[in-house]
Image 1 (spheres, helix red, strand yellow):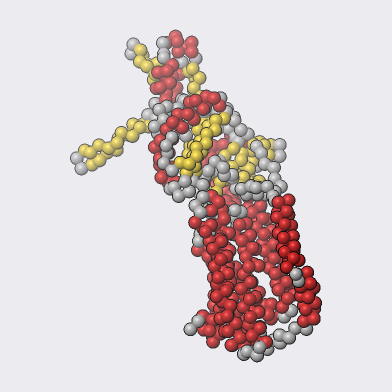
Image 2: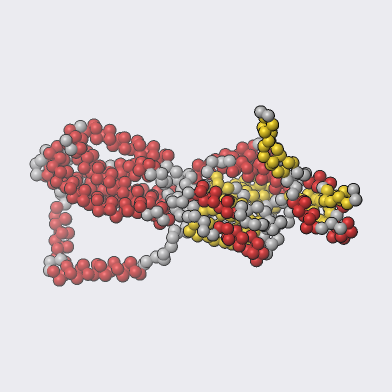
Amino acid sequence: MSPTKFVLGNPTAGLVIALLIILFGLLSLDALPIQLTPAVERPEITISTSWRGAAPEEVEAEIIEPQEDQLRGLPGMTELLSEARQGSGRITISFDVDFSLERGLIEVINRLNRVPQYPLEADEPVLSTAGGRSRPIAWFIIKPDADNENDIEDYRDYVEEVVQSRFERVAGVALSEVRGGNEREVRITVDPYKAAGVGIDLVAAAAIVGNNDDVSGGTSDVGKRQYVIRYTGALEPADLNNLILEWRDGQAIYLRDIATVKVQPADKDNFVITRGEPAIAVNAYRESGVNVLDVMADLQQAMQELQAGPLKRAKLNIDQVYDETDYINSAIQLLINNLGFGILLAVLVLWWFLRRFRATMVVTITIPLCLCVAFLVILAAGKSINIISLAAMAFAVGMVMDAAIIILENIVRLKEKSYSSFDAALEGTRQVWPALLASTATTVAIFLPVLFLRDQSGQLFADLSIAITASIIASLFVATVLIPAASMVWLKKTQFTDNHVAVWDTITHTISTFTQTPLRRFVIVIGLISAAIAGSYQFLPERDYLPTGNRNLVFGF
């Protein structure tokens, strides 16, 4: 028994199928992550190295080039971009789409450990998988309360320990950074005359100070017990004055004899001003593929917890000054409005030709059913709701009704020939479903191959391919299984006499007069093709990867 005949014999089963499709579709829509654009995987690792006060040429020669020498021939690497700036250098490594980022991270760490030596003043390299081309999704500003007389610049360490660490624990946050404030550093200022007076070699002294660290000595088995050996050589800044540099004739020469040790603010390389007053800024980067709206909600919840807890006790205030979801919500809402407007226009045009409310509703039910199937398939494929997938659904709205219109028109034609409602629905579907299957297959054959592209363009338009393919296949099922049952039940008593036959005949006769001879038909076809080509060439927009959009925003620090 064919599905069409089964549903015609059991209309309640068809209603249950339709309700289940809508139910699971709405549940899928609620569970789908929302993003501005599809998650295009760019396996990237960013290596950032700071060397305060160094010129770009020095950064390139002493840091970037030694790192590049070790990173050459990295497995899976497709691109290596280096950037040397005043006081810092950055290397961004891009890998193949299918390459494991975890494996790449381990390989990069091993390669960096082979770098012979970094300048003494340079910091250790910092690795990030957030991507050098990503941007923060949120910015927060921290300022003191009105009754807090302390300088906000002195709260840098506190913000890093409390606020930054809390944001980085939020699910979906890849990285958080702090801007502004004063970092504290231990500064040792050597008096060269005193050093020369006692005969201390500054290079040797620097090496001794540089060994101020804790070292693990492994383990030692003594009987049935195992002891962990650890050398505690790290000193607190206050104890550095008593660091022994050398013994001379039984007398110790201390660091305080040739230098002064101070804990003081580091040289500032950035600052934050908000409304004319100094502040500290904290940002947050998202991980790839997460729901930005959920991440932002969790960030705002963390902000409220910080404000009510540690920041309140420290007499500090935190405010959010940038929220990327505002732009995402406005863009998505605009597309949803256009999608709804397109559905309304499609229904009105359909009603204009059918001139019957029930017949229009029979075809219209195809739209929500097909969209619900698309939501379900998008969720199963691990994709998201974004401007690409929504645009695909808007594009598919007009396509999914084609099969239903053909089925309904054929059923109506047979009813006008005195077929019963059951026979008209069954025979009308049987006559045209092979042609509809071929039409659906050709449409699917156009969009489905996009799923097999592994590059960035394939990832970008995979959402479009999935949404359209799922909608078109669902439209074939709805048209051949549910529409016949709906027409049999809803159109049983509908009269199909057309009161506007004279109008349609006049329009048909007018069009026929323009296409009576082969020459006229040839001229019309060539004219339409030429006009289409000329118009396409004239109004062809500039090529770009993705539109940048228009954000009413100026942001800088």
